[in-house]
Amino acid sequence: MRFFLFLILIVCVIITGCNSGSNTTSKSSGDWNTLLVTWKENLYTYHGEEVSSDKIGKEIGEVTVYSDEETRDFTRKDVFSNFLQAGTKLYTITDTAEEKAIAAKDIKNQKYIKLIYESPYSFQ
Image (cartoon, rainbow, N blue to C red):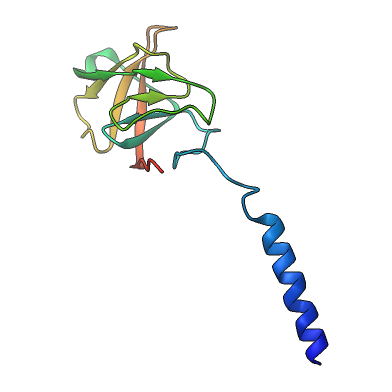
């Protein structure tokens, strides 16, 4: 009986040891399959929704760092995106709190897109 318990313990240790570190991600709390923007240490994601120009409020910033590489280093003060180019302007939406959503003017097609707040962004 002791041998059986010892054998189960060894198998569990081997399985756990082989799995640790194999599913690591970058420094972000964001899923890199998601189109994301970090702003004011918060994570916003794009789900395909546009915003009409009459709902666009004041400019609140712009994307300063673009990268589609998960290992790219950036800091808390950077406004980062994995799909919007550096220089993309960010705006408030007149009928929506910044804590719920913001807008960006897509440089490629000149349309305003809605970025929905997901969570605080963790810089690990």
